[in-house]
Every structure is written in structure tokens, then in C-alpha cells.
Length: 221
Image 1 (cartoon, rainbow, N blue to C red):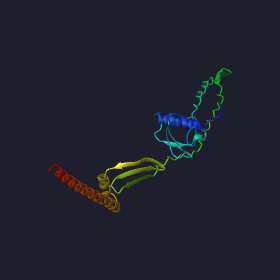
Image 2 (tube, one colour):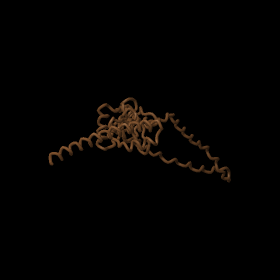
Image 3 (tube, rainbow, N blue to C red):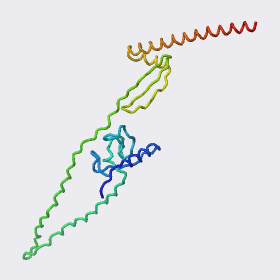
Image 4 (cartoon, rainbow, N blue to C red):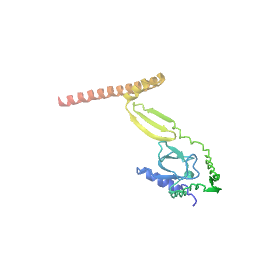
């Protein structure tokens, strides 16, 4: 029976299973390198973009997560292998009967018994160990506005995992002090400029409040 590798529809189905919180089962085909064909595994995740080995699985009985291509996996469970038939027990040769020579019985010499040759051990096929997927590079970007508002974006490889998450200015200032002095200097400059902008706004609002209070007092007088 010919093996059937994963089709685009199979890949979409496995993605849907992961999205619902399940880890669907797959089996390795004879095209898989470094693992036995017919062995089962659980789908853990999909890497982006869909090029080469982008399906991450965990083989049954192992903890490592390895990436494979659709041609190396199938959703069709292989049939169970039949157990080899038991070999019949080897009969022990009967002891030789004595041969009568005159009145003296001399046992005949035992016939030589050929020992079975040991079966040659099957040569193990050399298989290249599949390298585990390397961890992707992580890029963290901090952005600020003239009003002193901060946000962060996180990029893992080519996948954006966090987009424009708001950060407290005090937290950014505290983290910057632990980094390179140039980073701390740039962050302090932005915070000082935002502080001066807000201070000017407060002074303006305070003057407007005093003028409004004065006008109210005159109307009430």
C-alpha cells in the first residue's frame, strides 16, 4: 500500500486541531530522515513561513520537538506488524546405539553435529541525526511620542508576537538605567522633553483656571 503524505487540506486540518487546543497525531513516512517509518508523533506547532520543515512534532516517547516537511508525515495510521512465528524446538540427537563386536560392546562414535551458523546481524543503516530547530532571533522595539507615551513591539524570527503594547514611562526609565549608557541617555532625553511639555500645559491650565475664577468672583460680587 502506497504511503500518502500530508496534503494542503491535511495541513489546514492539523492547524484547526491545534487552534482548538488539541495536539493531533501523525505518523512518519519512509521519506522521514532519522526516524523509523510508521512511528507516531504529536503535532506541536507550525513555523512561519511554510517553507521546508515547518511542522514541529514530538515523537512518541521523546521530549524533543523536531521539524519535518509534509512529505515526511501522514495522517494515515499504518497497519500493525504481525509477530514472527515461533520457531519449532530443536530436537536433541539420540544417543548412538552400542555395536556388538564379539562379546564386547563398544559404543559407536557419535556422529558430528553441525552447529548452525549464527545469523548475520543486520547492518544498521546510517542515518543523519536531524538537527533541532534553532531558536529564532528576537527583536524588541521601543517607541515614544512627544507626549511621553511609550509602546513596545516584539518580533520572534519573522513573526510579530506583540504589537504596540503600552508601557509606563517610569518602567521604561528604570529598565534603561540597567542597559547601555547611550540607551539610558536617549530615554532620559525623551522623558525630560515630555516632562517639560506637560509642565507647560499645567501652567497654561492653571492660568486659565485663575482667570475663570476671577471672572466668576466678579459676576458673584
